[in-house]
Image (cartoon, rainbow, N blue to C red):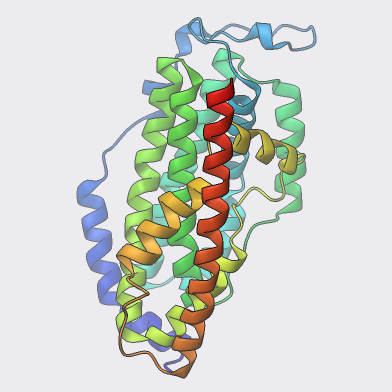
Length: 306
């Protein structure tokens, strides 16, 4: 097994190539061009009410409001994600250049979502700020400790975030809100592709260690919102609306990335460590498939009997 520093060194050429691809594909955009500032007015002194929202005629469901809050507060915790990613992947060379570019793009997301929420008064600004202070003061984020785990986690998490942003935007019912969330989701998709393809390259160098990392990260995956006040209640509402739940996680993240892209079932060249990890991973995937099927059946039954 190569050392962590050796793996980082061996992957540096791939980082340079993927960063160049990223810069070619990404589009320059500006938060002020997607936020509907024409709807803006001073927040009233009275206690906020959902009726204060100006969403172009749309009525915001509580689950969608929860998703907007979680999505924004997740983005607000960027200082801790940056610290984690830079600590694990490094601050020098192509790695450092990527981490800083990624951070700059992620910082723009909170600007756009916050601008939309404040301009439209879609959420209680006092409650939101108190939650932001509590979350960022706590500094809780998933923190993979090895290069292998970081590449796997970031591949899965960036895709999960893209799906959550995009689904939330569709369900707002306001074209401006969908435009904001779609623009953010487009960035997250490019970030996912960077990490996914970098992880693919790492599999070619250290398949056993990467397989073990996939097994750990699939078994213990957490969305980066665990420090948000009331996160469990938000997550239940988000899941109940089908914005993001275990069925979405299995069908739209684990299957396309772990099974199709990384082809863990058919991967050759594994040693004892990798084969043991794969066996445990496939047992976990089978369990996730059963859970996803039950959730989908329950949801279909609910729709049928509504």
